[in-house]
Figure (cartoon, rainbow, N blue to C red):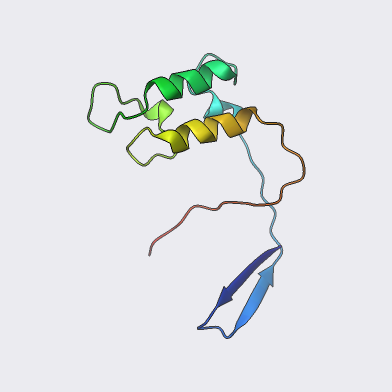
Length: 97
């Protein structure tokens, strides 16, 4: 269930949602060796600080796709290595219109 509250609404709206994650392994396999492991974390960590347009920047290590390889990218690849139990939170992309 997803609950959205807004002062403009004056109330909350709760919606049932289903999220299906596909290609998680491909997304998390930052070094593209066919396995999601500590080598992916190390590869992303080795590129922290690189920004789009710089020689060290590689899009495959920029998991957030924000143009900068930073600790958030390392955290995301690390989460892929963490066994997941029941989902408690879902982070959806922000869309500006």
